Length: 171
Image: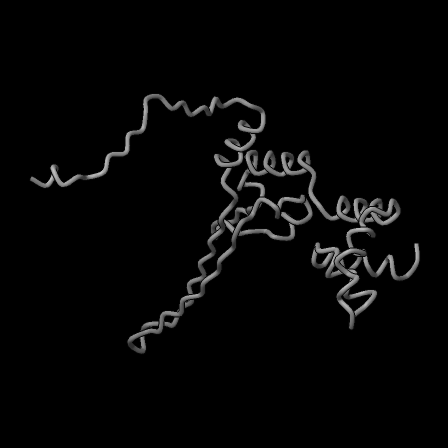
């Protein structure tokens, strides 16, 4: 595959528009041939195969998505925590080593400083950590839908009648 074909593939993967990708690589000053030649390049078997390979390399398969949903559904917050005499602490290193950080949707940390109002009162800091995991119930729901365990059928019965007001209705 030549340099221009590779550049076309790179540009196509940025914009997903064959005409624009052709224009950027081949004729930046002349747009007239890009409309015909861009789509032709997509028919080239080498280019098509390389595009498919690169897209597959960077996208998540349905099986991988189901595996991630399964991990969300089975996620155990206790595996992310370190229990000590001071309470619970998020152990991000432990979570990362075990591959559990993908269970965490959001981490929010706040520090509140309370200043003593008199000389006998000490200043103190309160650290607050909020962890939100992905919703296990939502993950289970999606998994069950994929496996066809829900019977989501909408049945419409009866007729829809549209009636317009007439002058007689106003009397």
